[in-house]
Amino acid sequence: MAGRQEGRMFLGFDFSTQQVKALAINDALEVVHTSAVQFDTDLPQYRTQGGCHIHDDKLTVTSPTIMWVEALDVLLNRMKKQGFDFSKVAALSGTGQQHGSVYWKTGAQSALHKLESNLPLHQQIKDCFSIQDSPIWMDSSTTQQCQNLEQALGGAQRLADITGSRGYERFTGNQIAKIYEKNQDAYNSSERISLVCSFAASLFLGDYSPIDLSDGSGMNLLDINRREWCQAALDACAPDLKTKLGQPVPSYENLGAVSSYFVDRYGFSPDCRVVAFTGDNQGSLAGMRLQEGDVVLSMGTSDTLFLWLTTPQPALEGHIFVNPVDPLAYMALLCFKNGSLTREGIRNNCADNSWDKFDQLLASTPRGNDGNIGIYFDIQEITPSAVGVYRFNATNEPQNSFSPATEVRAVLEGQFLARRLHAENVGFRIGPDCRVLATGGASSNTSILQVIADVFNAKVYVLDVANSACLGGAYRAKHGLLGGDKVPFSDVVKSAPEYKLAATPNSDALQIYTALLQRYKALEENIAQS
View 1: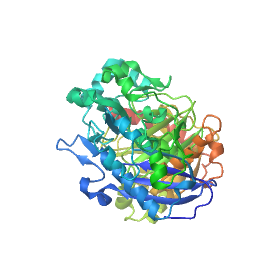
View 2: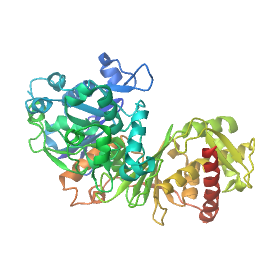
View 3: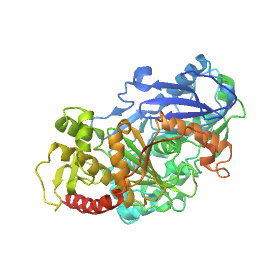
View 4: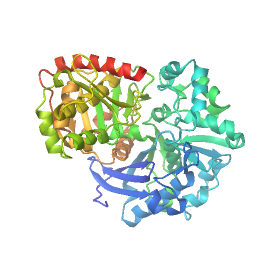
C-alpha cells in the first residue's frame, strides 16, 4: 500500500520468520504506507520453505543470515519505486523474530562503518558472518545445553526466577552454548553476537546495536530483576560472552542517527533517529497498546496470551520478559497449541461444520455447563505438557462423551479457564478495570467473546490490528524520539483508534467461574501428573 504522506513519519520494520515488512505512520498515528518482501517467493535463490531450512535431524532449523540483508535491499528499493519519501521519516524502529541469533566475525564492525552508497548492502557485508546460517526460534536441538544451564543455575525454577523462563531449546543462550561446544573456531572469531532485532538495528545504524532489555530477556541470560546480564548464566554457556553481547539498553533507547549509507542511497534525513529494535512479541504488545491490567488473547491455530505484569511470578510454564514500553513493568507470554483447530473440530463433530449451529447449541446451555468440564488436548500441549481429551461431570467423574450442546460449551469454557489459570500462575490478577483485548479469527464470534468475558469476569474489546508487530515498531519509534523514559507510551498512542467493546460479563459470572476454576485446576494437575 503506497498511501498519502503528510508531514513527518515514523517507520516500523518487522524481520519475521517468513518476510520483512515495513509500515509507516504519520504524526496522527494513521498508517500511510505498507510494504513486504516474502523470502520464499521474492528471494527463491535461498531455497527456504517458510523462510527457513529444516535440517536432516528435524531438530536444527536455521535461516541464511545474508537473506535477511538482501530482503531489506529489495524492500527499500521497492518502497523507493513506489514513491515513498524517506526524507520525512523522523525515526524508525522495528522488531525481529524472537530467539534468532547472528554472529558477526572480527572486522564486521569496520565494514559497517565503511558502507558505500552505490552498492547494495548485502554485497558489502556478505563475508561479515562467522556463522552463515542463523539458528532461529523453531530450532529444538539444544536439549542438553538447556539441562546444563538449569543445573549450573540451581535448577529449572531458579533459572526461571532469574531469567524469566526455565531452559528452552530455542532460547539464545543455549544456542550460543551449542555453537561454542560444536564450533569453537566460529565462536572465537565472532566479535559480536546479535539477536535478529539488534542485527536489523545494526544495519540501519551502520554500527553494532545493543540488545534491548525486553528481547534480551528471551535468552535465558538476562537477570530480569536487575536488568543486566546474569554472569553465572553467561559463564555456563560460553567464555567472554558478556563482551560479545555488549551492554543491554532499554527498549525505547534512542541509539543515534541513521547511517549515512541510507541517507545517500535512499534519501533518509540525516536527522532520522534509530530507536532500539525489540522482539516480535514485544512489538505486538506495543502495537496492541497494552496497558497495566490488560490481557491480549490472540486466537489462531495456537492461542497466545500477552499479559502486562507489575509483580511477576516466574514459573516452569510461560515466559516473563522485561516490558518493552515501561521500564518498571514486565510482560508475560503464554502459548497454547490447542486453539482454533480444536474449537473447529468440535464445531465439525457437534454442529455440522456450522458456526451458526455451534452458537445455537452454546446458547442452549447454562453458564457453568451444569458443572461439566472438558479438557481438550488434541495435540501435545505446552501448558501443561499433556495430550488427550478428558471429560468430567459435576462430581469429577470421567465421562466418555457429552451431548453436542454440552461438548460445545465444554470446549470453550475449558480452554478459557486454562488461559485464566495459567495467567494467574505467572502473576496476573483480574481487577475491576481489567480488559481482555481479543484478536485473531475467533474474535469475530460474539458468542465466543461472551464466554471469555464471563470466564475472566472482564470486559472484552476487539480491534482489527493488522501487522501489530510492525505497527508497534512505528509507535515505538515515535516514543523513543520523544524520550521514552520521559513520556509514557500511553500518551504517545492515545490518538490511535479506540477498541470496540464486544462483551461484558454477566452478573453471575464471578461466582460461577471462581468455583469452576478451582475444580479445573485440580483436574488439569492430575492429568499433567499422570
